[in-house]
Image 1 (tube, rainbow, N blue to C red):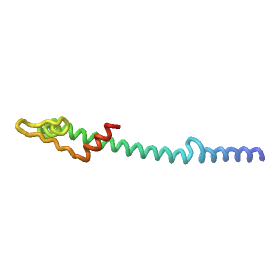
Image 2 (cartoon, rainbow, N blue to C red):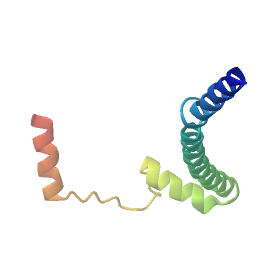
Image 3 (cartoon, rainbow, N blue to C red):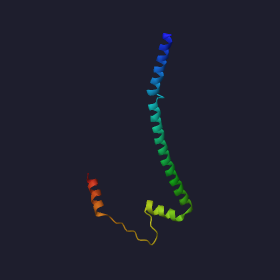
Image 4 (tube, one colour):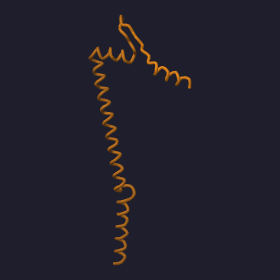
Length: 102
C-alpha cells in the first residue's frame, strides 16, 4: 500500500511539473497565444496592404487619370506645353550640403 501511495505521489508531482514548467505548460501555451495574436495582426496588415495594391492596379488598368498621376509623381513627367518649376527650400538645401561634406 505504501508503494502505491508513493508511486501515485510521484506521478502527481510529474504531472504538476509538466503543467507548470516545460513544453505544453500553461506558460508555454500563453507564449504561443501571444505569438499567434502577433502573427494575426501582421497578417491583417499585409492583407490591407495587398488590398490597397490591388485597388491601385485595378485603377491603373481602367483609369487614364490615375496613370497620368502615377507618371507625374513617380517619373516627374510633364505634359507638352506645361512649364516645370523646381522650388528649393534653402533650409533643406543647407542640411543636404552639410550631410554631403561629412
